[in-house]
Image 1 (cartoon, rainbow, N blue to C red):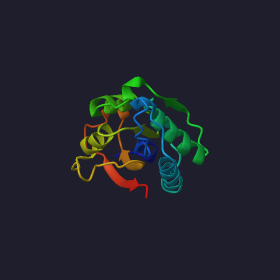
Image 2 (cartoon, rainbow, N blue to C red; image 1 turned 90 degrees about the vertical axis):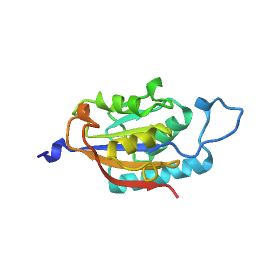
Image 3 (cartoon, one colour; image 1 turned 135 degrees about the vertical axis):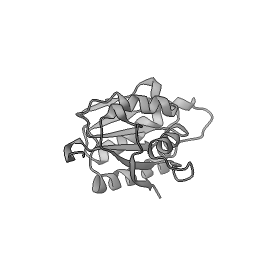
Image 4 (tube, rainbow, N blue to C red; image 1 turned 30 degrees about the vertical axis):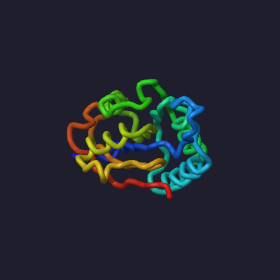
Length: 167
């Protein structure tokens, strides 16, 4: 049986609504004003229901960086660590889960800010859910718990507490 200190929280967040202007390369697409508002909504919910993440994994795309900046600023959060490897950009579930498995067990709450379809597919794989119930819309946040080492992530289904969508 896991002790309270061994319980870990995994947060998967899809970036807010991004510009679809073709003048931008995909990696350089910024959030729209609506996307910024969505991120603030999710940050407020996160602060009142979950708390502050202590570790951030963020795709290097502009829209995910902006999402993380808005959320961390709104939470008045100064994460212990924040990394943005290029491998997280439009990553497949195996890459995302692999990055999470490398976390040190001193990390209690991690937020991974990324893209679909990789995030939604990862959510489905980690929880054993269906694709429909695992679909993350822009600025959606999935909250899961793990009672084991990060290195064992995916060896058994995680408990999905909630998927919060911005309105």
